[in-house]
Amino acid sequence: LQDYTEAAAVTFLFAISEWLESLATTRARNALSEIMSLQPEQANLINPITKDIVVLPAKCVAVGSSVSVRPGDKIPCDGIVLDGSSTVDESNLTGESRPVKKQPNMKVSGGTINIGNSQLIVRTTATTNNSAVARLIRLVEEAQSNRSETEQLIDSFAQIYTPIVVLTSLFMCTIPWAFSKETGEYWLYNGLIVIVIACPCALIISTPVTYVAGLAAAAQKGVVIKGGQHLETLGKLKTIAFDKTGTLSEGIFQLLHFNVIGQNRKREEVLAYLSLMEAPASHPLSDAIVKGAANEQVDIPKHLEVKDHTLLPGEGITGLIDSKKVFVGNKKLFDRLGLHEQISKEDATTVDDWAQAGGTIGFISIEGEGIVGSYCVSDKIRTEAKSVIKELKNIGIETTMLTGDQSQAALGVGGLIGLQECDIKSDLLPEEKLVAIQEKVDACQQQKKWWRSKQTVMMVGDGVNDAPALALADVSVAMGEGAALAMETSDVTLMDSNLNKLLFVVNMGPRVIRTIIENVTFSFVVKAFVAGFAFAGKASLWAAIVSDVGAMLIVTLNGMKLLPRKNGSANNEPKKSS
Image (cartoon, rainbow, N blue to C red):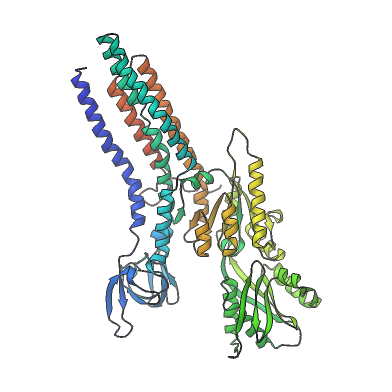
């Protein structure tokens, strides 16, 4: 065509576009690479015999080792502080900018930094591969590899659309030459314009760049979302079902009351049996009972031991002590065994009073003696739970509580955090939680209309018993301080178990969907607008390149707005209700 000026302009524009595209996406790449760099590289291992410090790669530190963490050092592995008092920066793991005071017997996480003025001596409880920061990195890597339905749809469209555009442009650039040189030159020029205009780069990049920004923003806040498809699901949220223990409450129990029932056993004997049964159990309630028995200086006879210790999901535990079958658990267990009806009205009234005060009630029975004791443990409600429930209701999301606790205890806690009686389902076994979630998922499916996508159900939990319900929900959220199985099953993990982070991701979902719609719509409108000028013979090649590159940059920058600002605040921070 011998238009050298325009050829130079085209070459320049293509070169500058690559640089601008790289510049625009660097921020998202850096956000994710910062997370990958959290893994500690070395550890100051304390020799157990000589007490000398040996510097080793962090991955070589075994569980049970003692390590020295000097001011400014990264903690190499999850562990417990043995000696020293200092402040630790956990912002790279939890997103919480305020340093946390650490003292002996407190837990610390690998990858966090000692920013205080004192050395900490830490006994490791996990290797670097099993630490909290390693789990975070694995979850982020998994999130990047998961593709959403929208991404797959756009890729499928591009696989059909691109060959059509290439063939159309090829015909425009070749066939007209058969008529005349002038006609060939005219259509060659327009064919080049069409192939540039029709390039689907902006459309293809519009979705993944938004997901990367959303995932990176969440990870920097201490929230791990396992892929873009879950961001989409969050944007269609209708109902959130909460577990109680460890989710709406902190899961830190205290033994408030213990009564002996009957005349067969002394208080110390029953407490000893109860402590023996609860010691092998993993529920937070069990630890409170064991500590409560220790506080009363209960002496457990050395000849007593538990055999055949078995978990009864949603009910309690059972085992053999001194060749006698012992049961420990809730009212539902003892109703099933036919033992609860045998206790006196006075004892039943006392237990009911404990439950109405919001406590969790349990009993212990010994074979041949019936129920020999009752107890009440109390769990502290999370300080942010009430405000989070209120904010969720303000934005139109239904909230409900699913718990295995007795009705009175569940209603007591629900009332304190702003839930109505109709929003609370209690005395649920794990399979009953599963049914409750299935009912909500089915209800959303039935309300689906052809002009709108299905609304979704979220389950928030922390324990092994919650894992089936978490797996069934459209999107599931696990508390970072909960069971590992719950985190593996869930789609979203709140690393520091702060429910305010739940508001963050709930608000992030609609923002991501809105940004994707903006990007896709803008990409199509720009292409159609410039294509119209091209077919009218009013467009130039350099203008086509400018529109293509400009559209790609605009959708990239629009997606990047989801990333937190440099001062640490986020563009999509949930707004406070007035």
